[in-house]
Picture 1 (cartoon, helix red, strand yellow):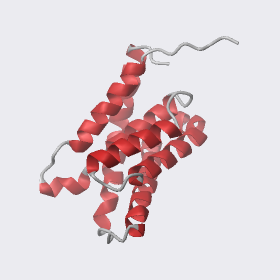
Picture 2 (tube, helix red, strand yellow; picture 1 turned 180 degrees about the vertical axis):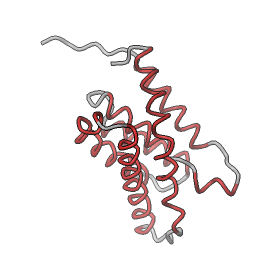
Picture 3 (tube, rainbow, N blue to C red; picture 1 turned 60 degrees about the horizontal axis):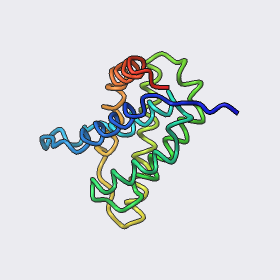
Length: 162
């Protein structure tokens, strides 16, 4: 059996590090509810582009890192990102052929699932749910998806990540 050699793993890691940094970046009070789900969007991209390299385990580990960064209960974001990775891997062949506008809508639905799992875990912990603004990151993620997709695709092609 021939072992498949992978290139450009550092590009994947750097994109996740940048996504975590963008998530930690302070925003003004009025904009904090509109913060896109950077880590979830980057995870969706890499699960679509390279499902054999980035999957549920990567989503779980990234979620744990996000839990530590945000100071939330350990596993809150990990559960949501693992589910998002699974859904993306199951349907990546269909999503890849859709136009960017349709992909953006699907990403919005995936971010809504991610937010639902976060809200569900918070509810189990007895933390009261926030008002409707908890769903705003799905909207901003949908609007930013085409640019993020094109940028990550160009980096993947430039550095021959496969």
